[in-house]
Image 1 (tube, rainbow, N blue to C red):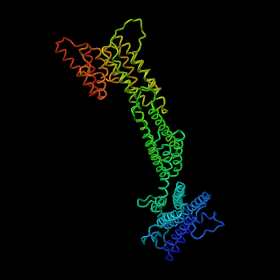
Image 2 (image 1 turned 180 degrees about the vertical axis):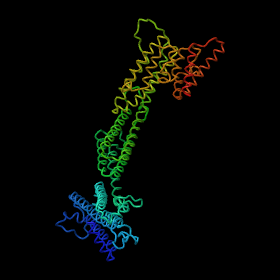
Image 3 (image 1 turned 45 degrees about the vertical axis):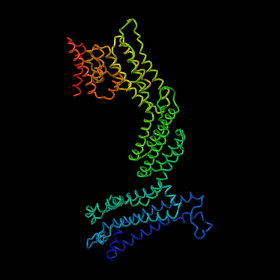
Image 4 (image 1 turned 135 degrees about the vertical axis):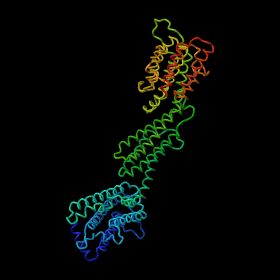
Length: 606
């Protein structure tokens, strides 16, 4: 009751003992709380029920008997809850007292009572009280757990429970501050009302305002630091133990499904228990990230990196089988942990970020585990595509009544190879999306190489064009096993279809095609136009006296259109030179068209 408290303060002020009285009252609260804390943590009282008949002899340590640890723990947590209520009640009294002191003025001298107390260098009484309480908590907890292993184990083992009590206490104190503020503002009597406006800020107590020099919440939780450190250390052990167990030294296989499930359950359990507090959640999330890293390191040690890991000639080797198992195990871990995180309610963003970063490393490890195999398959596809130059595409259209032109031998070989690779190797991976992400990239590369090599075929007769057109259609079928849908290949798929359409068009049509420079690069179209020129107009690789394989490598090393067009321009200039040298009267009909395309290309680049 602010009015009654105000009257009492006025009496002590008139007697000249206001300051001492306040000091005594606050010290009294501190002394009572110190006693409360000692009683709550008194191991003798906590173990009392178990020692009814036998009295402990001299020097006999008070500790729960083996069967009664659960009863002891229950009594301890009941005591802790009671203690939090007592701290909260005492704080409320001091907050109320401080509030009245800040509002009450002496009717004669008009001095505010709080100034009387502060003028001797005394800080505000709530601050003094709170520092005393938090220091007592720290010292009493320290000495109690130093002298009792059972208390220490209870607070370390069930730290989240203790932290939740502290968090609840802190919320209650803040709530009380807001309520007390509201009550005073609404019940402010007329004489207080004027000062009330300007004092609004001053009357905010320490539980409401954030002070740079002093954080009252941190002061409260400082007494918990040692238990948090011990809890996190044990939590990390609980997370690491099942992993060290399922990756024994010298072991050669990744964990079984059940073993992995037990690891995931441990991760979920640690995160669930820590959910009482965002800071604890983040700290445990860091432990989970370390756990995921450990799983990655142990899995990486099982991977086979020998030559047999990347062979694509025979059936799965022992090393390849193990690599598949490791990738499947990493994938399962990745998906399961992801599910655990999504199921966490109110998971702090920083904690989620920490775990997600660790999971990304797992995904990267899966990538590097399949890379040798992907490289081998990619190299084999390239080698098969290069063999198209061993076939003869110079033929004219013979036997016009025969519309069913068969596809080329290299295309049949490519189709057979891709089907076999998918069923022999990639079918065993459980992570379909991950496999398709990688094989689709391989399919895009295969299309790039196929168009590149098709554009270099010389000489190319009308019959050859027909067969090449069939090869283009068959290429989509060949690549189908590597993709979810061939149309998912996007630009690569459009390039394949656009180039096939150009095979039968006149050079003039090709030069004005809308696909030019948009779907198909200028350099590819120019390479293709060389096939319509007389042998004297040499392709860039013929002029440089390179094999097609070497030219293909050069194109890979020079992905920029500028470099590629410069090489083509060199070939065209060499041709002009050779015509002039032999004093020729005219250039090949395709030459001006090629110059026109080249100029268009150069202007686009600029």
